[in-house]
Length: 380
Image (cartoon, rainbow, N blue to C red; front, top):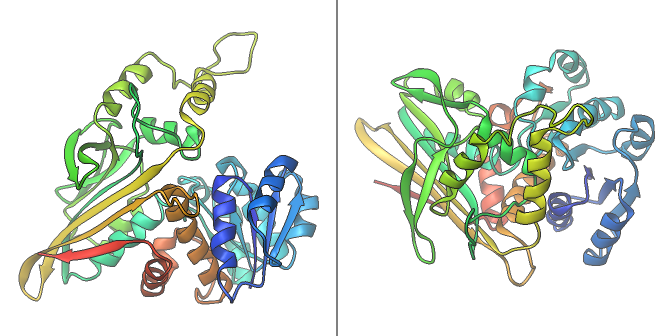
């Protein structure tokens, strides 16, 4: 398989490492606009499978000539580039997946569907940790019930050594984080689809040491595919992010001052309050740090005539040996697995879809567990 990645940063480089560990992958092309980023990648990965290219993803003609021959392209750069990369993928005859487009590609897919179907190619957004892994795990659990009734998704990445006042660090995109904290939150209550306010619904959630009592609160997510696939029997569905205690209150205070508003701070500049906040968050909360990914999905339903509960849980921590953060590991294994399934031809036909609707769940689940994600299933 020949798989290409656009974006050689933290996530793109991790996806490349995962792909090159598989014998079925013969070549991994990775593109980035910055020479220094590519040089860092080349210094950490020594493999004859790797090919690096300095190119601006917005230059469709230049990047098309490089990506030609790819069986799947992974978008690991700015989410704003994913619509361009999706069109490029169809132009060169390749599948495409990304780490998170929100609902943009799914909402504005009319120009892509006809061509994707005609070429039997897939455009698959939201193949990262959340959305991505958590959605696939939720469906993996719900399908095991005869009548699924509820699913409560709790997931978060947290620093192992929190520092006040925010007790949080940014793993990838400050812009994506602000979207999660400001956009309407999908949920299902009493069988009806509805919306909740982000940063509300605060609850305590407990994990083994060194974590103990954490907090969880509503954040934006992509739950519509889960609700539609599970069917009308699903009475409860919600999603909350896990953080160290105190984080939600600090962010509520900051956002209440208007620093996430998408309007210019002055008539003499194009910068918005949101731009300034994202930049400062990257400066103050970015950088290298040791982390953990905490995940717990509790599902209830009827099985064999009885009420039952199934819990999917994962606690993944920073890998000291490989100097790999848990969020990079979880995200890269998910994206690489979906990219390989697409490239191998395991997903038939073509179109534009989230992974929950088209990716074979058994093959996906077995692959991510084999790759080392410590997912545990418990029935009660």
